[in-house]
Length: 217
Ligand SMILES: CC(C)(COP(=O)(O)OP(=O)(O)OC[C@H]1O[C@@H](n2cnc3c(N)ncnc32)[C@H](O)[C@@H]1OP(=O)(O)O)[C@@H](O)C(=O)NCCC(=O)NCCS
Image (tube, rainbow, N blue to C red):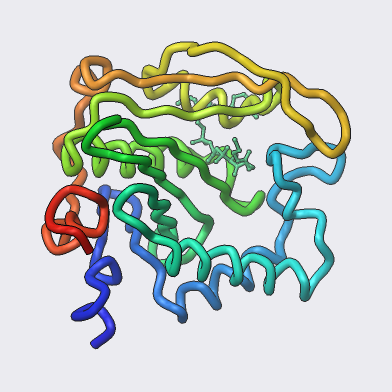
């Protein structure tokens, strides 16, 4: 079993509604299919890297390269865990969580997308809550960070609903145009106020050393 060598394949976060798991190659094939679908309106770009503009099949192949790179480049000092998000067993998108020098920073950064036909039904909020539970309850984080372009109402809505506070702004390149990118932070104290008892994380213990929280991987 690959998970004997790479225990992250066993990592699961469950909420009453969703399952988030570290994706196997079969999951990545499903996500590559999903990545063909619209993620946003054509006249709006939510991402600093406009990967959704690439035509098929380059888009699916680029997505696979990206996920394989995250897997291969995982390092105790800097890692990004992508999670395939399953709603009632159906893959709907990806929720990432990134840590850099976690024992020192005790901070994570999140990013996500859902295909358009599954947006606006509370999935984005639920999957963010799931990785926040991993970060605060599982990895003992003290801060969680996120950011979004100022016109990304859905992403800003998720952060607002989960108690993040504004944490500055910067100008970013968006497809050749300057665009304001808003940053947000959720403190451990703010997370504790909304802490949920119905989210579980499975098989985290053998993964900790890969994330800088144990012996070197
Ligand atoms: C951003 C994204 C992940 C949010 O997920 P979602 O499932 O659409 O959002 P939810 O349904 O969970 O909504 C979360 C909150 O935002 C609000 N919201 C959602 N869409 C909104 C919109 N278009 N305008 C205003 N508020 C909105 C909801 O009302 C909810 O707040 P509430 O709990 O206080 O009612 C999803 O829309 C998406 O993938 N968008 C395209 C990619 C993207 O923008 N990724 C993030 C890049 S920073």
